[in-house]
Length: 240
Image (cartoon, rainbow, N blue to C red; front, side):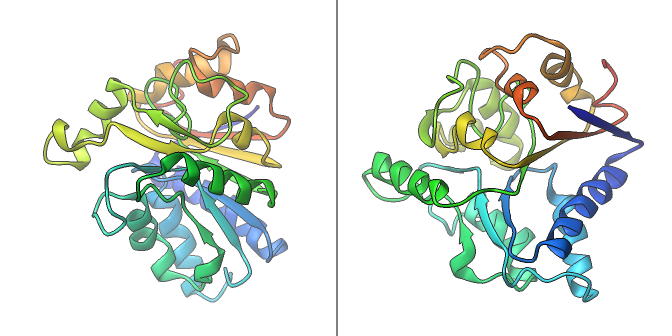
């Protein structure tokens, strides 16, 4: 693991954004794995600014998102489909057919998992962007997820739902299930870029980097990946 510690969230966003932008510039037909949540918002803002300045284009880029809530229509303000539209896709020149997000609508969710996994098998992700949950999850691969799992329907841990309650009016509105890439899918990316900010992430970052590789801390699987970069602000890196 390569660990980069920066002063604050703004510097974290710029550093991560520059890594992604450099890849897009050097390999215009690259495939990006994308994440949602509050942490990558600054990174996406940086990429939008670079695009608006005419410095990069996403016209030939293909993207795959990590996960999507079940039980929310894509039009819902907190769906990850809507998040990506609002924070990135509507501001750049990416082609609609090149944007892939798990579909968690409809009755047969297992078929949706299988369809998304089939798409992933036809692609090679050049760079997978990750955040990390306070319980050590990556994507929505919660503690106890077998490392060999591919795209699957997951039950969200209560800790995850409590952490995400801030985006909803109440805990009752937070979905209980999601479709997520599995850890096997994540580890198949050529390179991985994990970003984390704030003191609430310090403990899980310490477990990920210094602890044993264990399914109890899903992010610890990244110790087995040959090209993982972790960008932390000072608070997230406090226990390293």
